[in-house]
Image 1 (cartoon, helix red, strand yellow):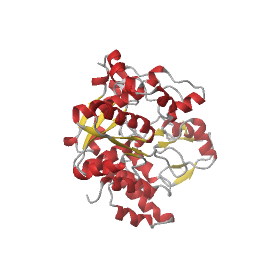
Image 2: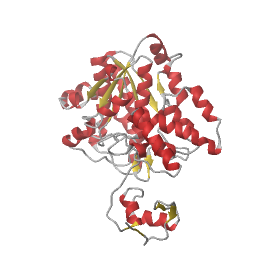
Image 3: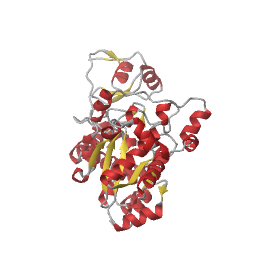
Image 4: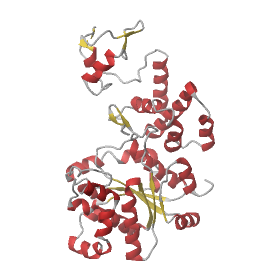
Amino acid sequence: MTGNILDVLRDRGFVKEILNEEGLRAKMSGESLTFYIGFDPTGDSLHVGHLVPIMCMRWLQKAGHNPIVVFGGGTAMVGDPSGKDKTREMLTAEKIDENLKGFRPIFEQFLDMDGVRICNNADWLLSLNYIAFLRDIGKHFSVNRMIKAEGTRQRLEREQGFSFIEFNYHLLQSYDFLYLHKTYGCSLQVGGDDQWFHLCGGSDLIRRETGAEAYGFTIPLLTTSTGKKMGKTEKGAVWLNADKCSVYDYYQYWVNVSDADVIQLMKLFTFMDMSDIAEYAHLQGADLRKAKARLAFEATALAHGQEEAIKVQKAAQAAFSGKSSGNMPTHTSTLPALIVNLIADTGLCKSRSDARRMVKGGAVKVDYGAGKEKVGGVEQQLEK
C-alpha cells in the first residue's frame, strides 16, 4: 500500500477528526503502531453501523498496524452516555456474556485474526479498587471540563439528568486506553464521532501518567444522503449475523441503497480500488443499478463469504427476471390466509396496518404461477 494510510482512510471517508495529526503521521511512517477500537455488547450481534470501524480496522491492519479489539464487557455495565438523550438500560453480567458470544465470528470474517488481539475490558475494570482508582486516576480529570462536554451539556440543558454512574464512564474508557498502552504498547485509539471526548481523555491520561504521546482519530457518523442513520430498514437494524438478517436480505439492503449514496458506500464497505470506484461514479440513472449490484456483491462476500454472495446474486437475478430461486427466503403458512397477515408475518412489513397501507396503495402483487397479479384488497386471501 503506497502513501500514508491516513490519506487512504480520509479519501474513503473514514476520518473526521485527528488528535495530533502531525505526530501520528510521523509515527505511522516510521513504525507499526498498536491501535484499538472498542465495541460495547449492548446487543447480541453487530450491525452495519458497527461495520464502518471494523472496515477501518482492516485497512489499518493491511497497512501493517496491529489491532486490538476491545469488547466492553465492563463498560457495558455502566452504559456509554455519549450521544444518548437518556440513560441506557442497565445490562446484567449474564446478558453481556450472552451478547459477546455472537461477536467473535463477525470479526473473523473481516480481519486476519492471526494478527488480532481480543480483550474484554471487564478483565481489568471489574477488579479495580474503587478508592485507589479515584485516587490514582480520578485526580487527573476536571469536573468542569466533563460538564462542558457536548453530550453532558445537552443532557443537562434538556433537564434529562445525568446519573453518577454515567459520569464515571469517561474515566473508565480513558483508563482502558491507559491500560492498553501500559500492557500492550497501544498508542492509537479509533472510535466513532461521539467518542472524541473519551479519546482525548485517554490520550491526556497517558501523557499525565507516563509522559508518552498517544494518538487518535474519529470516524464520521454514518448517515445517508437524506441525513438518516445508515444501517436501518423498515424491519430494523441490518445485522451482520445470518441468523438475524438472512444473506438474501443483506444483499438486497445494498441493492436498494439510494443512488446518491452508492459510491460513498463502495468506498466504505468494499476493498475496491478507488480507480474502479471512479468508473462507477460516471454512471447515471438506470445504469447505477450496475454499481449497486457490484456494491451488494462485494459487501455480501465480505460479511458472508464469496460462495454465499454468488448464490444470492443468482437468486436476485432470477427474481428480477420473474423466475423463482431456492436461495430466496421462504415462509411457511397454513392456507387459506389473509394476504395482509402473510405480509406482516414474513416481516415484509413491520405491522398489519403497514401491510394494509401497502395493499391499498397497489404495491403488493402475488405470483400464482401464471404471472404476477396485483392484490385486489385487504380482505383478499391466498388460497391453496
